[in-house]
Length: 241
Image (cartoon, rainbow, N blue to C red; front, side):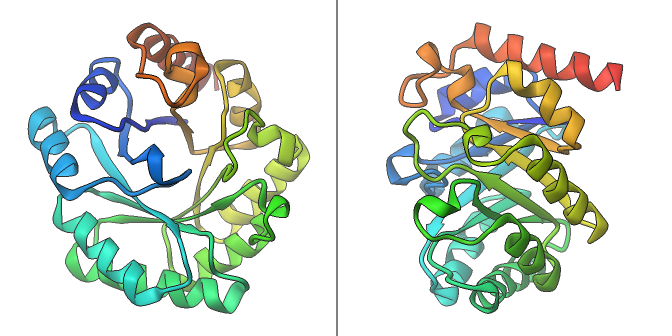
């Protein structure tokens, strides 16, 4: 089970790297759950760290249903050098629309670099705004030939992944995704105490920001001590498994 930490600046990315995170996911929290960062920040982070063992990721945003816009955003991300691209399906209203958007993202990324991991991302709290369900996300990801499917939380008001989906529901989501050959990332205000459950349901990647920030507030800076503790706990669970 790998750990993905989402910094918003080069300084935070360096902290995450020094603490040993597997994936550095560069985002912009001022533009939403999966808010897109700026090209110059992404390039600066990759250039500053310059570590081939680290996987760099970028979010494209909580996207409206505009496949062309998503395609250009994806091209911008992969052109900056990231190897993970996460597209948040916020505006797509059904499976057909989700597939249309994700096919455009997958084609753009794979045409540029076949080794880029494309992540179909949605939201565990989909009922709160009429979004796509986890089952629909798996169908979209598999049909569009994404590499991974992810759920996060869209509304950042303190509710966690587990306030929206039970352990059984998460386990079913992971099982269904794995049956379709997809890796799974889980996020959404999760903390270290959630790691045993996340491992138990079979998550391949656990994504965090708030859990490694001061006061568990995603709007504050990443705290090196919290990041180290979280990664140590995740590694211990992975070894035990």
